[in-house]
Length: 601
Image (cartoon, rainbow, N blue to C red; front, side, top):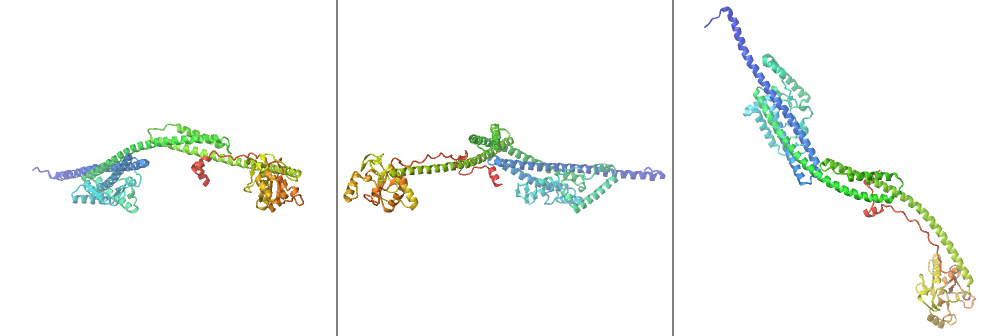
């Protein structure tokens, strides 16, 4: 053995110790670098997980919008089936998201419990301890972290089998789009909890590495304390892997693998929902377009019919309105409607087709409102016109009444003159009769309305009817007759019964239909008032006459004839609205919704 000189032994001993220490330090530095790389991979996997989760939330939100758009055409079997498929996909996606969240939480060392529903952060209470507990638990069970997470998630998924699709809700633990995105819109971060530059220095400086680990623990402890105090850390939307939770690189790599698997599940769920949503969107688009085309065609036909009828009515209205501006407004609305009716519907875009249909429906409503305004103005004009015509008609009737009164006075004067000229009664055959005394033809006589079974010569009958009207107005009863026209045979019988008073058959004025016999009250009234009607109580029949007969009166004014009233004026007829038949057809008012709301105001 080579012996060194004694003076050099301390030096070489020192060199040996230094070399031995350098080997130890080098080995520790390599471990730190490997751990740093593994943690960085896990953090990158966490960032991808956050991105996949955000993508799924966005896709679910878009799927909900597609379902709402398709709601109006779910009567289509194809659309209904596609809606069901999309609903199934969203239910499965919600379950997948919950399972992935539990697995991700366990892999990141931040949870592993049974109530993980919101984005998990690295700044929960005691992150390092939580990660260590999870690792220890996994080690005891003989499972890798990803396997343990999957097992936990599977258990939770089995426990919560009832899943609803409203806002992507999972029974027991709710997972909404808001849950998937987190409670803030912070961008997911892959920033390592241990600074990369610091770890790089640690690779070459064991003291720095140890110092850094210590500072990590201190910083994490401070964060945990802050979280426990304010509760703000639990609402952070960023899923961050806690580097301090992993004792060795293998644990970090296992976490990265578990996070990657969770991301793949989310990505697959997203792709499935997207595919179903696109499928529903296309089928709904086709159904919406078909419906829009059908509705548009029907709306065009209805609008054309309504506009044609309205044009005819407005033409009939003419200028008979109180406000001429309603006509110009109608013309503008009609032109707009005509343009839309003539437009070509977009055949390949349901949105554009629905917009055109909505525009057409709006134009139809505007046209109906404009027509209603024309109607109101027209009917206001009619009311004013009829009121004016009523005044004119009233004046015409008053003038006519005056004319009738004057004519009746002239008629009465003519009758009085005839009576004055024939005080002793009628003599001879009257005008207007055919046949001989007692043997007149039926056409020569007229019946009396107020005295059934009695007949007189036409003029005599008309005059006695007028006298009866006056008598009835005074007394409330009709004139009472005992005899009127007397046939030749009846004259013979009467002469035989009353030879002292009855005329020789063939000579009686009863035989000409020019005389009547009455009861006492009627005879007294006609004797006193009959002159204005052409009737007279002959002087021979008056008290002191040659043959007093108080009951006998004769008509003597054949030349005056019946009363002929002046011709009635032609009255102005009420003007009728050109819209009245609409009320008749509908059984009531046909005001539009705009009219009704205006009435309500």
